Image (cartoon, rainbow, N blue to C red; front, top):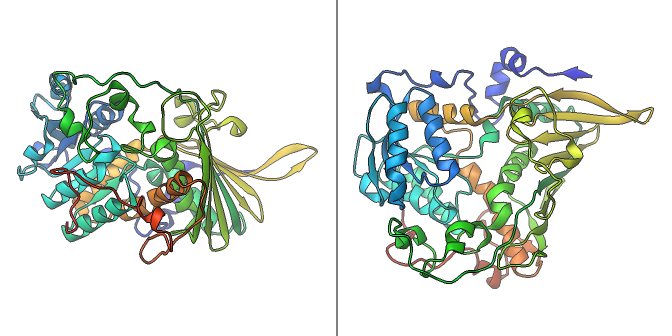
Length: 455
């Protein structure tokens, strides 16, 4: 068995590592992207700091020492004061301005970039508005609510020459760069099957009565591009399970593995997509808890398998993400399996590392090659800051993120239509000969929360 060392891989093959995906950049030192003097810091506006992810992104950028937060934008003003107090202590006493409506920040030329961590139904529109205002963007996944608005976000980024990084951090992980090189060098042989898993436990919920929103919450803006409706605690807290706001577990978590798998396999658009799914748990959630999808590419089939009733299927914990240890693959709920002619590779997301298994010997597993992983959040932030500085497209460029979330959108459309096989036109991204499916390709927007035809 050969062991591929993370640091050694980068030292031995820097040119190869940087060239795997058309200019991918990995920075060993997150502080190396920009100098740290105050006049050279990247000035950020945080859009959405209520969830754990938005706050985590904010603190992560501040920990670098070369970023500062000029604006805290969140529709819930109850978060403004506690977040501001936290960030002030992390950035040398500079006090960020607090806004409920992030659009009030767009005219401030001192802001270099926006970090978007709102609910997903806002991601594309917020990205477009920030690009139009001359801001670079770090946008959390999933980057769009539907295929059409995702393409509009790309048009805005290109038209206004903006850097847009999607929060699919696996593309900045050195161990995944090494896995991609391993595959491109043919060490696994030709890969014809890739299986993607998202298995966890997610409880259902019951609708409560509509009520008035909390006094501190701008509910109209929170609801934004979604259809108008009264405040309901279920919507505000369980939006991931509702079609008007998200695409279920596949869109919210499975996209990490789907994006990584598509990148490792080197494929773009599928020729056909089939998906079936069902919600077996009792409750009012709309999206499936059990979902199976098949994506057909030239010379490759990719499958996606999801369960939300499986508490014994585990995500990689911090010990695995940041240590020299591999998951127990059969019960790792976020794994990717690549089946080549010469062996089978298991890959973990967010620092799980990878191992290559070949034919057993004396009934015992034989591991041919392996590499430990590390949580890639710092690397991904570093890549974004470097891209803003150099104007080179980032590792998870908006176009690449769009092609990955398209797989989710196609699968969900197929599933919502009862498991209909969709034929895809790669030139237009449209679904062929299926007007009913194309009606789910975009949504109706309500003023003023409109994704315009011309961006």
